[in-house]
Image (spheres, helix red, strand yellow):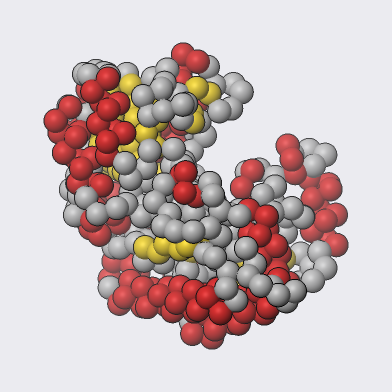
Length: 436
């Protein structure tokens, strides 16, 4: 396929936008080539400036659970926007959204709307610090919680080493309060808590990691974190910006039966609009201003257009439980079909799936943490990615991102995807022998 219009737009964008993109995830740095500029999307398909049609496995990085341009969502947005896009005052839509979210997620008493998942995670940590009176928190290597300074920290030489900035502009003063553990490794968490006794305010993680591919929690990992938090007086924070309302009606809380103290949500609750939220029990959320001393604000928080879009999506998910069963079935078909194709072509691959989130890694398995993910053959992934593009299938342009299946990915779409992978791998391995 040719992308002359996307190339021209990318060249133009680089003159005014850093790197030509407004988020590095769109830059194709991990796979090479030119980012594709989209014009519209419908159901499982996206369409670019050059008129190409793509089977989409990004889904706006998670929120398009029912597919693009879902009629009820589009209607809600159009109706609300006609009355103004923002007021700067409360609206009934905010009440309806809060009722819907709290009604779907077990143990969630109150929520505060934000404008992004990043804001939601930043605010959750601030609340945890204010509630506990402690400064430090634990995150996990490979889990991404937005671009807040405290989150842009990577591990040092071991689990007990204080983090150091992984982005210029993040101060060492900020980094010293961020402690990095290994995902799915309770021992690493326990050591950090022991070495920082009575100093850790919270442990934050993606209960299903989606920013290093798809990496689910091992059996007992989340329950172990809950137990450690209770023993050490820290709060447990689930970042469900990706997994919330996608892996189950009630997200990870429902799927794994582990109750965090705070939760952060994003994209999904706005059906892809810029939105986020954080919430928890009445007791913990009682410290949030204006009820309490922990300040958090946002002029456009609870934006009426975003609220109406999110209410429309969540209502469909809440009132039609068959959606999750069908999502599970279609995602399993895609997983099994691709596994058979990789096996047919003797390509070494590990994979994980939780509901409609998938991860494929070109390395030996199992993949349970960042060190495992780091072994994936990124060069082969790049070749596979561009091969799938040539067949009209748009995968996340990084070996370290999860794939998302929507309810609009029917049997025909799944079969096209599997056939495309078979064609691509035939070409990549045609010189004989396995691809790796």
